[in-house]
Each structure stands twice: as C-alpha cells, then as structure tokens.
Image (cartoon, rainbow over all chains, first blue to last red; front, side):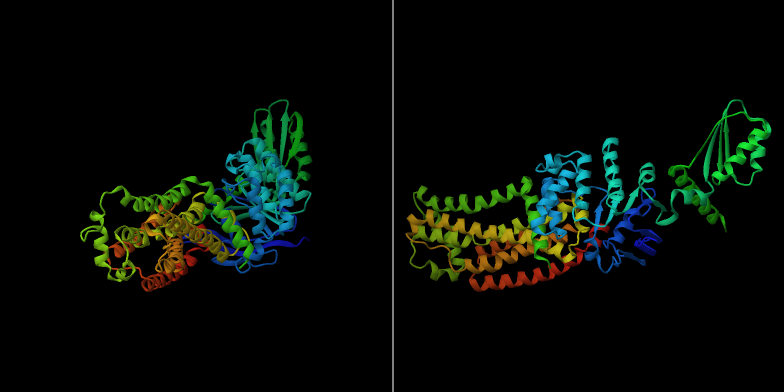
Length: 322
Length: 273
C-alpha cells in the first residue's frame, strides 16, 4: 500500500453563499497521477489552492506531505510545484531571469542555481531562447517554461492546473509527454486538474469527478465503469440483420446493460469479459450471423458523462421530493 | 524574514519597472526639469534682465516672501538683490517641490508591483512560492521605498551641484544646502516615500490596473503642493523644527497606513478579489 501524499476529509471552502469546495474527501497516493475532473467552476482550482495553503478552508481538514496546509503553508510550498492555469510568467523578464527568480524564492543555493536553471532550460527545449523576453514566446513555450519553473526545485508533489489549456495539438502533446515522463520515470506524484478527458485517460492512474464543489465519483477507470454498470462495451459486427428475437434474448441475460443496435452493428454493455461468451452464444442460438466481436473498455469520456448524468438525475429526483 | 527572499522580490519588481518605459520616463523627465532646467532659469534670469526691481520690490515675489516669512530675515541679511533672489527661490521656494520626487518614484514602483502584478495575472505563481505574506509585502514595499529615497537623494545632490555651480558667479561661495534642507531630505523625504508606498498598497487593493493605482495615488501630490503653498505664503515655513514635526506626523500616518496595508496584503485576499 502506497503512502497517501494528500489526504482530505470533508474539506470545504465557501465564498460568501457559494460553496466552491463542498465536503471533499479523497486520498492521493505516492507516485500516482491523480486527475481532478470537472467543468469550469467545479472547484478544481480552489482545491489546489486549499491544498497549498494559499486559501484557508472553511471546514474539514487536509494533510499534504504530512503537513497541514493552513498552518504550515510556507514549509509545504517548499515541497510542491504548481503549474497555474495561466502561466503567470514575468513577460518583461527573460526565461533565464524568470527561472532564477523562482529558484531563489524556493531557496535553491546560489552556487547551484544558475547550473540548475541552465539544465531546465535545456531539458525543456528553451536553451536557445534563454535570454529572450518571455513576452516574445509562443503559448507552448510559455507553458513549457512554466512547467520548468514548477519543477526547478525538484518537488516530490506537482499540481498541474489545466496544463494544456489553449495549446495547439503539437504543444499539447509535448506537455502531455513531459507529464507522463515526470510520473513514470521520475516517480513524482501529480495532481492533474483538467477538463480534457482524453488527456486524463492517457495520464491518470485514478480520477475524481467534481461538480459544483462536490465529489461525484472516484477511482480507476475500470472501477468507475464497473460501479456505474457501464462495464465492458462489446461491439459486434453482423453479416445480416438480427433476427427479431435476438435482442429480447440478450435482455434476459443477467449481466447485460445497455443494448444499442443500428443496421449491422450491435453495441452491448456487459459487467466484465466473463459475460462475453454468453452474449455470443445467445446471439448464435438466435440465428445471428456474427462477423466480429470486439470487447473494449468504455472511454473516460463515456464514464464521465454517465457520472454527470447520474448525478443530474439524482439531483432532479431530490428537488422533485416535496 | 529571509533576506534573500526580500532581495529577490525587490530586485524582480525593479527589473519589471525598468522594462516599463511608460512608467519611468515621466518619472525621470519631471525631476530633470525641477533639478536642472528651472534652477538654471531662476539663477540666470536676473542676468537677462536690466533691473532686479520687478522681482525684489516689496510687491514682487522676493519682497512678498521676505515680508511673509520673517524667520528668513536673518538668513537673508547682508545679501544683495541678486543673491537674495537666488537664495530665496532655489533655497526656500523650491524646497518643498523636491518632496514630489520621493512621492512620484515610490508610487510608480508600488503601483507597478502591487496593482500591475495583479493586472498581468503574475501574482498567483508568486503566491505558490514558500515566501510568507510578510516577505512578499516587505519585498515589494522595499522595491518602491529604497529607490525612491535613493533617487531623491541623488536628485538633491545634482540640484546642489547645479545651484552652487550656476550660482557661483552671484554668490561667490558654496551656500547650498541651507540648514532646513537636511531634515527635509533625511527625515521628511523618506516619510513621504513611505506614504507613497503605503497609500498605493491600499489603493491597489481597490483598483484593477497599474494606471488606476498610479493616477489615484498621484493625487497625494496635493499634499506636497499644500506644503509649497504654505512655504510661499509663509503659513508653514519649513524651518528645521517644523520639518522635523511634519516628518513625525507623516511617519505616524505611514505607520497606520502600512499596518492597514499589511492586513490587505494577505495571499487569500489577493486571490479572492
């Protein structure tokens, strides 16, 4: 069992009547990439601020790297690196000056500082523009520089808030690859806030889905899809239209979820792969002419929208109760 | 308080201001006019005039100042008309004007580093560093205060060279600065610089842009103009004793405003606004 790097219990923060974070309880384990997903206003950025002691909670508690962010903010921030939603770089200063400034604030010893700055600039492909003003950089370059700044003091815990927002596909891919490398090769713990679901699916070990400050679901993709009953999606290619009785026969199987049938394609949700042979057997028995059977995990996007739909249905049901 | 953190924040803010020409060019032009162009004009004007009478007559500027500020009588005793003109105008009339410099320098840098940083959305990365709220505040305040005082003293030095140099043919000796300038420069000017910083911090918390902060805090210049008016009319002649008292009052106001500024400059308050 890996050690929890972040632990929150009923963490809450209100701004006037608005509950930006509302009773958040979760753990992030050492070395994992943990995704905080949700639409704008879900409370992701506020959570990052609370976990770094930049904001104080209105309720609940948090421990990050064994410290209480509200009490030990300065000590904690010495060990965290944060990529903010906007790069927050000093555009009138050069890339080298930006890194040197933050290196000094993170108390990197003077003799090491210039060497470490040069290494980061090299590593993030900015060495040839090191002495140019950041205002002249492209968005992708700024984002790489901001990421280099977050890593300069070699923090064990990284918070990345929308790291690919506003980037073109190429720059976005570069940043995503860097994050993957940081986690897989260097073993850093990463808390990634994003609403890019494909990016989260590629990078995250576990995700938490938030909406209006609340945690809607938490787990690995497999755990989430299993708990939602979205399980495994089985795509079945047919040579001829299905006999009328086939779909009804499938519905009688116990492990079957959604069934969608369009022309010669059948899409069946099953709990897990154990259920696939029974599906095929039933269809064959009913006279279906099967060309292909492709089981696949649902995408994070499918799971995410199912979670949101379930939450909205539950919310409507609650509101309907007089 | 970590000295390296304070220095880093202060140097960063100064570098940023130096890169913003729109901010510092006016701050350089105004002092140049006050410490070189105007004193030269005042000192050289009598040599272009056929008679000093329009200036020194009881109804002229020299006569009126002499009449309204009896305390000057001893210091002006034994001076001829041209010497009286030079000493009165460059030594007394101009004294409170120099207080515009610490105010101007400090409000420019403070507006840039407090409101400007929020306007450019660079403050958030700074708030995620280990620097404490106190270090962030003090680093930024020092970036505005120290250069304002140093530049004022440099201006004072240049003004002294110009007045003594250009006035040599009239005075025949180094006469500047009169005793009243020392408390003004060493006690009142730093208090005015601190006032500029403290007021700008408070104003910056309520406005969105560097320009709004700068323009609003620049209205403090009215305070200096009140001192100028006081000096000219003789209502508040800045003798050494009066200068010490004015400085003390300003430092007390600074203390209150800085206390309020520290309270507004909390991480949380900066993000929530």
